[in-house]
Image (cartoon, rainbow over all chains, first blue to last red; front, side, top):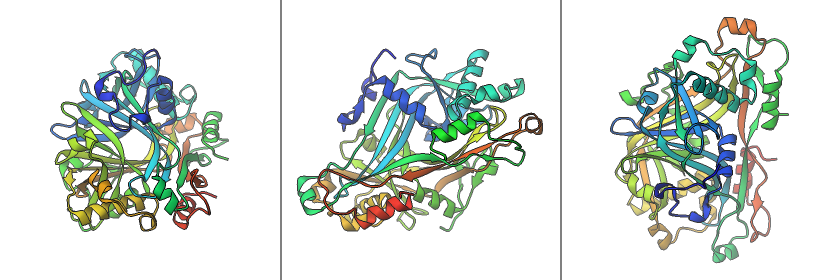
Length: 225
Length: 225
């Protein structure tokens, strides 16, 4: 939480730099509200991008904090990511910008791009902590209410970590940046805000009794009625 | 629309292959409903993943159809993508799966992974067509209601294309896959459905008069009231 963002040339925005944000709190807010990261790596001569759940520990052991992601030990892409250079990109779409020209048509969004080497998390305590954080990122507080991981499950899971150090954040908000002539010629330009909204929780066939508090609170936080 | 998906080994799912879909229509439906693609490429010794708007022409000139994306001629990552291997990944998050263990905790999602070489679209007619498709992907019908691109705007824009041929689609739906013992021990497991919802369109400072039909229809299609 100490250093501003964009510390290196490759995470310093060239174009549209007015959209760059350097406040680390804004990065953490985006990482908190988004659900999926797109992780890019070299899969052996070609780039591969896969979506994954993730979690953040702003006080984690890596420089400027840690982003964790995980998966099966049998997942080839995760094996390829171990100790390798990765790019973790996290995007929330906030709106459609309906401009008066195609050139100014756009979207409102927040995007974090994090570059780093994927550290393999081997320490048992850190692994458990990271897995709990991932459960709690989806449904806050849930890790404390469900069964603990078994030794077998832990052995079947690999956890990777990336430092939040080499990161950039780009944000677009508001309406179109139309030319004056276009505004004169066309009476309407603007944007359509977009939100993520939850429906009511759906119990599975084995469920009996009420929806637990952690799940209900998460659904309500995401707008379920 | 002829060949099933996953024609090559690297787009054939290894793990969790029960989640693989090979129906090309399902791929096109996802590409139609999603808004942002994450494009991965080799940025010169390290992987880079950036979000971008896109559009699809299922009858486009590339094998099994074409996905287009575009940007400024000054965008370095787009220049790096020209004639290069790229991975275009498109994900929609459909829900949070609240399992009875961390191991089974998951998300519901649809993900398309498209591998290919980014073709530079030079033909003027195809460029204009692709740019119109991109406007219409955000707000259907809008390209016909706004100012046409100028020569200067076209010169400032690069358009890239990727074939929809080497693609995979992975879909998760429904509740958790909990162990019987966990279901016995914990009375509730299930999922929280997630949706993208639009708010009412917001006109910019230059707007006068009603929201145009194309924008209104798109907002309503996305659930605005």
